[in-house]
Length: 298
Image (cartoon, rainbow, N blue to C red; front, side):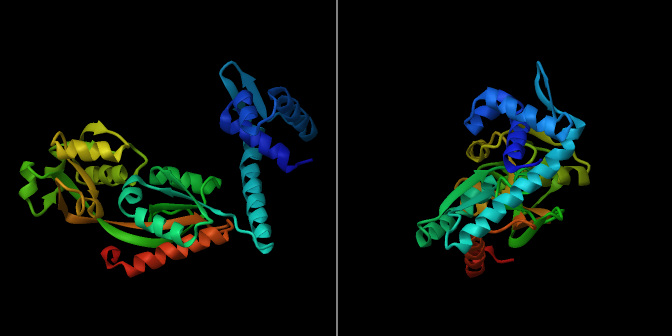
């Protein structure tokens, strides 16, 4: 009664919230998709989807099937990759989620060096916050992802990558720039420019704010790293950045927090997922590059 095509169609409709959008993504006619889903529901004997003016919603029965369908489709994709590699083929693509600061200041040289050694492999990089990256890993939409190495879901396998210090970041001519260190109360007394919720940068600062019973003045919120840097350089606000950013960014002074704030970053993937040859090579290449570079040692 269950087959991969029906499950694929079902998941697509749920994710798009519309038969029209799902049909377009599947490259089939909307009428064909509707008929296929109706027959699928008839065979199962339950209603999976409910249509309304607001779009398509999932019934309780549909929610039960949805969780299993995603697992089944991920397993089938893993199985296909494994079979392809047994035939001497490679998946040929590394899909990795990387937070903005890491993507801009840590990974470019590694990505270029990896591509130079493996020109036949494609690299697909998704820039997003660590929480979103976790969700994309769990759903199978990403193969690899960079996350904070704490509170890692049991479904994910995490391998330590680097430990980096989070520091206050101010313009070179800002009154705070002469300080050798800064306490949290002083930091939160100033206007801040921050990433939006979902990024580890914001999560760390929100946690510091709560722990020290401070009131944060979030004057600017953006996920554009270049904008954050410009706002800080022009002294409209201050922020907090990884030390690997402030060490190389001109016109920005990094000031260590007291007590110090260190972040443990890791590369993660689904524990029960199948890592292709391409992904395994990228993991090994990255970890070897980090071990050789004393700049990122603990």
